[in-house]
Image 1 (cartoon, helix red, strand yellow):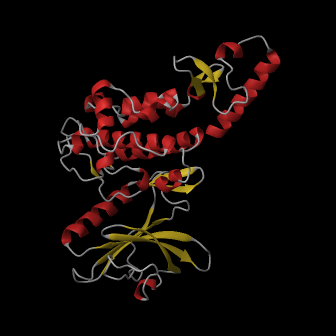
Image 2 (spheres, one colour; image 1 turned 60 degrees about the vertical axis):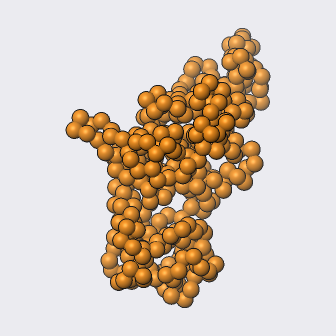
Image 3 (cartoon, helix red, strand yellow; image 1 turned 120 degrees about the horizontal axis):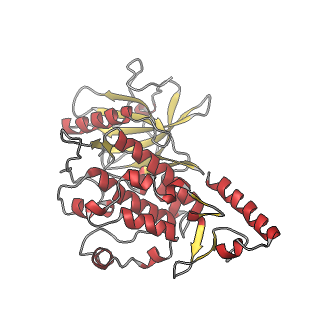
Length: 359
């Protein structure tokens, strides 16, 4: 059985050249680790490659991330990533199963992380397969799971610092897990427990907060919230509201100066717009913390008597007009309170089905 930090096994072997990594691993790469063998390459970055590994006997699959460690700085980053993953224990954070380093010299040194394999790939690819975004219920389910994962990170004192759809893995049709902690770091606090500003500006520009993009010290936990809002927007629209949070970006400038939302924003359900506005506040002090997001009505499924508030459709004036996926679409909450008992019972049954789907 694979275990984190196990030293009783033969280390994974890999080619030292990642720039020319073949579609099929070399013979040295295919040495067995227990009963697992390399199956296919599923992702590649500047200094790492991810392979799907399979147990020929049981069919069990895992993911193997191989990292080029040609200098000590990269080894330090890998050790940080391993330490962080060992501290995490949440149903929506990808699990680290084993870790090892092989090679005695800088030129031959390789790191290996063995993790759960995501059967459906990244959230980015999963959403892009749906040209108009995910179903509103599935987007909400996924969002609540990611929020739970980020809450766990922040509670144990870790900021992800590179939240984006490609770093969220879709395990199956109803489950996602947060992954890729290569840029994650401990949240620094003063003696009074107040978060100190982060001066590391690594990450992806498109998902960076306004302060981080300007390379100004920012609160890493608030940066995570900003990026998570863009993930939510992407799940609903398969697009992003702007290219980056810079005044050079016309769409972002309109948002930051006049709070004029980009056109796709207006097509979102009112409850989604509300949580996005709080998460995308340009001023960091006005932006929600992840705990606020977790306590929002959108995440908590608060009951408002006859209807679940978050499932109500609103017209452009903010008046309730019906329910998502309800056969009685267009029925207002006033009509639902009418004395038409058969119709009321039918609506209540539909609501029970909606609740079952969401839960």
